[in-house]
Amino acid sequence: QVQLVESGGGLVQPGGSLRLSCAASGRFFSITSMGWYRQAPGKQREFVATIFGGNSTNYADSVKGRFTISRDNAKNTVYLQMNSLKPEDTAVYYCNAYIRITTVQTYWGQGTQVTVSS
Image 1 (cartoon, rainbow, N blue to C red):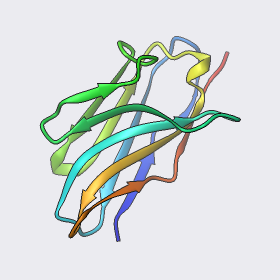
Image 2: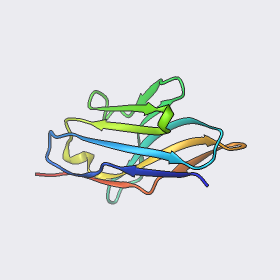
Image 3: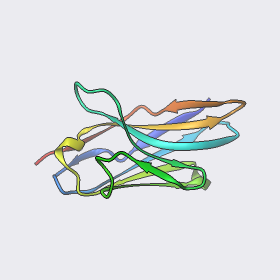
Image 4: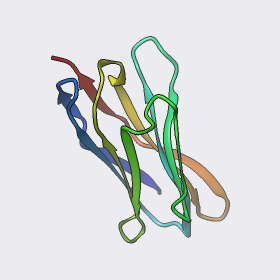
């Protein structure tokens, strides 16, 4: 059974930084891509960033220049470095991964709360 476990959320002041981590565990053949989504209260879940096997990346316009996604393939872990945080970044952040066991399927983590407030 594949699991994604996130860590690193918390409370931070505007302008501050946080680093989220997400580790994939279980038995699988390969990870195609890993990424992050977020969901603020009363809003739909939205895309934040993704990183592919060749380390190419994609970001939502709202986080470009402030957030950096990276990946440690040896640890099956994806990171999201969040700098210059704004109150509007407050949300539950979810890790997402496309993982091949026999076919490629999408998996989600349980979510980690990020609160940006003074």
